[in-house]
Length: 120
Image (tube, rainbow, N blue to C red; front, side, top):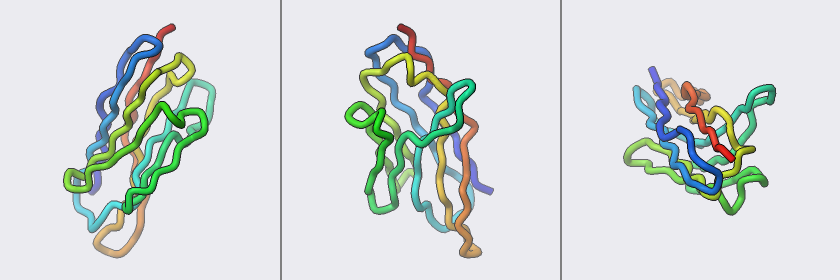
């Protein structure tokens, strides 16, 4: 069984920074892409940033230049550094990972989410 556990969310003032972490644990062969999504009240879940196993990254246009995604493959952890935060990024942030299991299947997994609130 695979578990994704996020941490690092909280309340911050506009202009501040937060660093989210997501630890992946359990039984699996490898982790493929890892990413962060967010969902604000009344909105659909949307992609924030994603990184491949090879280290390529992709960002939502709204966060380019302010957010940085990175991963530590040795620790099975993905990070999201968020700088120059604005109130409009307030949302629940979810970690996502595509896992290759021992049966050769590639399965998407989600964390439970962590709240990020930016006050004006």
